[in-house]
Length: 170
Image (tube, rainbow, N blue to C red; front, side):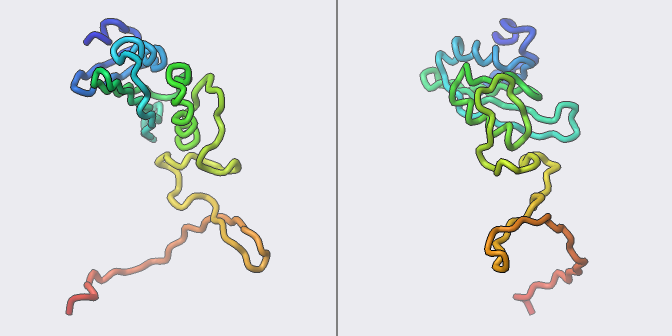
């Protein structure tokens, strides 16, 4: 493919379909090249991460870039932490903040990494596979203290036996 020939040190694999898939080691320079060349000033549609706890580098990032004028959509995939792509697309700031907060991916050079969806005292990364479903803290309003109180979540469940008999059948 043309991208693999033009950027042999960056691109590890290319699948050309109506939607192109690119595996890369250096995402930001490749995103610049796509924006200026193939996409003809396309835009960043989405940026998301996928958690693989058993992998040596646990997070795979995917940038979805699109061009309406050329009817092209590319998926650029890379593993681990990367430099920010805010310089390529300013809209990446929001997506990168979300990936940082939810998955723990850091973007070097990001202008404003702060929380969007969780509290400032929040511990952990909610979209990682090892994050407990119930979280670490439980917030409740206490009538006794007349305020919201926090306590550790207890995940104890007593043993239950199921007879698998439907209550709607005789």
